[in-house]
Image (cartoon, rainbow, N blue to C red; front, side, top):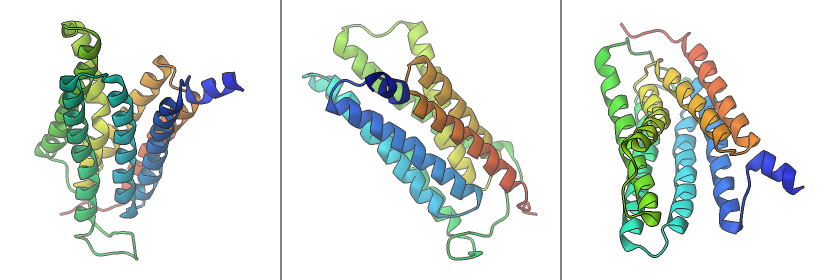
Length: 234
């Protein structure tokens, strides 16, 4: 049974580890539900976006704080990075909900809107979100690294961590694009999902999480297809 559990959910050691894994799985599952709803222009999806990011932040809080040890500096850096991440990601959900509510309802939850025509300037804020997400993810990782070493990681390691943070940051960036009624946002979400699949596979994070990231990517493609029938604004 332990071998099957490790295969499905990754190896755990203690109650806190089980809670972290459960929250991570729940966060991706909730995000899948959110994308399915957003693909149908259902504003309930934005509530689930915020809930999914809150679950992910809770998992990171438990995992990082438990790794911080007794260092006040490390704990402070960890908490600062997590608060910024939570405000940034859950804020995207709140922003998306407010944007959807500006448009007339097709029924009680589905909003009737037109897509924005693509402009290069529309990429600015999603790109800033991805860059900011990269910065705070580096801060969280650096705080844990300082717990075990007095020096900072090598430049090459920092570069890999920055790239990883940026690719995961494409999820809130893509959702911000959807909030702005930009269909290309679905592609950013699909790219973030692919990053999740690769990262989970390399870290032996469990087949359930891999399946959920795959489902998330497929739902992004589903949403892109569904939004193809929405007329563009003149």
